[in-house]
Length: 248
Length: 271
Ligand SMILES: Nc1ncnc2c1ncn2[C@@H]1O[C@H](COP(=O)(O)OP(=O)(O)OP(=O)(O)O)[C@@H](O)[C@H]1O
Ligand SMILES: [Mg+2]
Image (tube, rainbow over all chains, first blue to last red; front, side, top):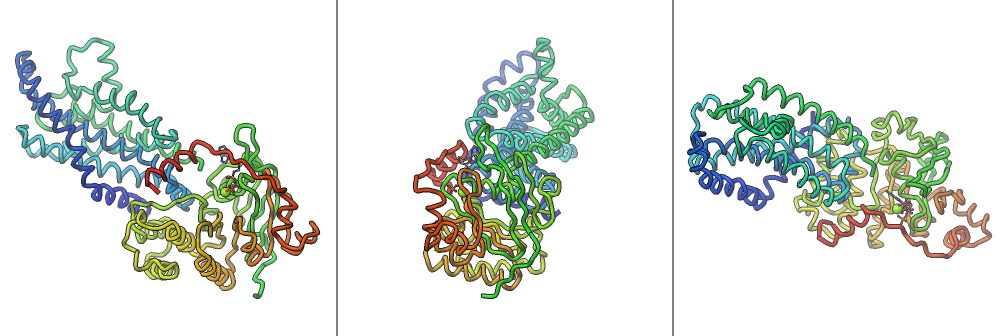
């Protein structure tokens, strides 16, 4: 228990210390909300899909959670590169506790980031329909944060340097975001695209939080949650396994 | 100084080998270290010292051979092995974005120092390495020697049965080197802690080590007390014995990718 706590604490402390990074990381979601939200608003409305900002906000919250979560998991590479990981690796504690502590810490940070973006969206003009559903929305944020932080740790366990990281960003994280239905509705897509969106775990996060925040969902929140939990548990397991295999 | 060496082996190494691709960094080495012994590990750059220490401390999987640490096999009982030792790595291993105190707290929790003595132990060690006044400063503001002292404090924090020190005094001034060795010898005497260290300072090995192993090209070329090594090579000092055994050619060190990254990181100011 204390192992998980101290790893969590390290992650959270570092997040709050890097204030300029927090502010910097809010620029992108804010820009997306303003530019896309208002830029595509008219077309979206004409197509009979309603208010685009209402639609888009869930997607941008999840984008923010996705990026922060992957980053906080993958910053394990820095520990690897700069030697601190050795200190953790020789500790007489089960690897799953290290994995879990790191993941819960990263997920906490990513969840906070998601909540901040939600608040920003309120200022931009986003409206919630049922405040009682807010805890459900938060739950989706937390689960998606856990899922992608553990994915980040798993990836960091097998790549050696920041070049590998660039590859992951371009060929994995960006597609996960763009193919999740964060920016467009999932109905009426070409079959190939539809299949890909169904494989993307973020799709279920976006769909879930969109339903919780009063929008129209595709799969139902129960289904969304089930998929996310299953995938998150798998990633946690895979991450623990790969972490155990790291050689210094 | 009274010898505190017991007659049981706390480290047993047999046929230990590590290959990177086709290159044998450690090549079929075997020796034992006794409980309470102060054991020095000498050898030229790239001889295989750090690789050996990494295999003894569960960081690296051996290609073949067997190891027993404090009665446990790192292959199937890593946690029992990890409970037995403390280590000061050759390369930097502190979290420079945390304070000195936070680095030690992290260690104390992970190495299960009981909560009620944690604070006292941390203060004691920080005072010993003369960093108590700087305890709330970020490690990135420390000098190289201060970082080294903090790593030393950390390695000793959980009072391990064995301490592995990979070139522990590298970059330390003579006063600090003395200060730290006096402390180590004191724990060795009082608690019977086994000390396994690598170094390039011959006088250090000569002064404190009861036995010395010399490794070259991944093989043990000699093992014994200073006197035994001098006798074997018909020389008068450990340094002469060492050169007689390993030659005087300078070793070209193969730098691998992660070393290069680490160097880059150091240049970018991360360390
Ligand atoms: N991860 C690795 N991949 C490939 N080769 C490696 C790796 N780690 C070490 N080596 C090689 O193994 C050999 C032994 O390295 P090691 O670090 O054990 O030497 P050392 O005796 O500690 O040297 P030094 O005194 O310079 O610290 C070197 O030739 C080194 O290049
Ligand atoms: Mg070395």
